[in-house]
Image (cartoon, rainbow, N blue to C red; front, side, top):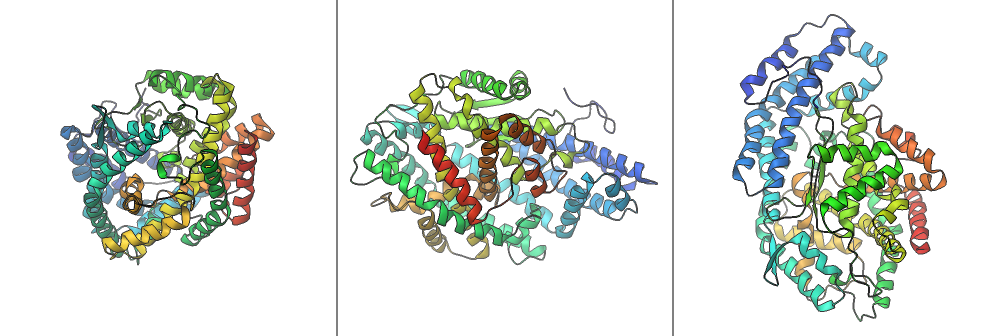
Length: 567
């Protein structure tokens, strides 16, 4: 049920800019005589932004659920090209009105949560340039081309058409020649689009660099840090993270892969040998269909706290889940907050493997975060930074581990699933560092050639990939390995957050191991803050530290290693 509207008519629907304009004019021209008027102005602005946000959300959701339907794509593009440029300009005008208000300090004094919002609005006003509006519009449309290209990728396997997500399950097969054949089929399908994806990224980089120059920045990286509201850390902190991961995590990853090579009695460990069970067991089948996955996940969340299970149960009842993989569905997974409804939408590409389970738990963490924030006073309070949003999701993957017996009745399968997940955590950290370092290079060197890009990627990937894995004869796949990462195309620089949040999630898990109820409550209390505190303050509320030093990472990795070895 939608929240009761007070500013817009209950039956108002977004049809055109002309129907929206009067509400922006009202806010822009409204006289504000005291701090209470100012607070109400914020509430009304928030209501308008919530309506527009949810309308865009549904257009995006429907488009990604069926990338082949050109009408749905056009519906999304209409908002981006015809409505969003206008709202962007008026948002800047509203920000200026807000920042010039004589009641600004009084409001922040009375309600400290507004300090975070005002800080963000001030930064948005600083980097706004009218000439960037058409460029940002063009970018948003071009960025979605990646999903259409990737969503159409399939392979033919034994006369059956499989999405690449479905085909990836074949990498769990014990028969090595099946794994190799599947791996090569997947990578050859990806490589067919390499030139198209290279050209798309080149165009995106060109546009993004121009946006940065227009706003007075030397490069898009610096613009992105400002645009993303990264007040609590700098590029230098990212570089420290890269170095710490290389120093503290890569030796353990190499050890894991060396053990795998020995256990499998292989002369060389190939990329298609990294998923299969090393003890010769068949692939873990976690569920028969997505209905079963949903029900068992709800039960798992109930075990944590009945409120958490009810969040996903309610979303199922509302039709806010699209979980199964199919052709012409965009790749990846997401939780899309719905600002008016309060209960978000979860999208993913499940095919019955362990990663699907962790993906749904991950997105459920995001969803619960959305529900915990849905009644906060204004929309910006409900929009935590990615470093906090990903803490919600990644922690959920780990704090549910004690209840994974719901999915695995066999003790051997249960231990195996937990061990595989902990391995994934250790191996994903170097990939996060790799992708982030690559993005810094892309935008520090915006005029690079495609050949230089390839060389830079291979060099960076060498730092963060195991030396145990043998790429001989398939180096061309390594050179384009980055093209599978949606974030590079659609949400540039949104990736390091997964690394910071993964560290936080391990610390949250540690806390629940020591005192489950205390650790869980601290985690939920932190999420309920939304974005009314700084990132370090929210992490502190969760009982953890916002820290990416080498020593801190070493301690957390040692904890994961101990847990992994105990299985």
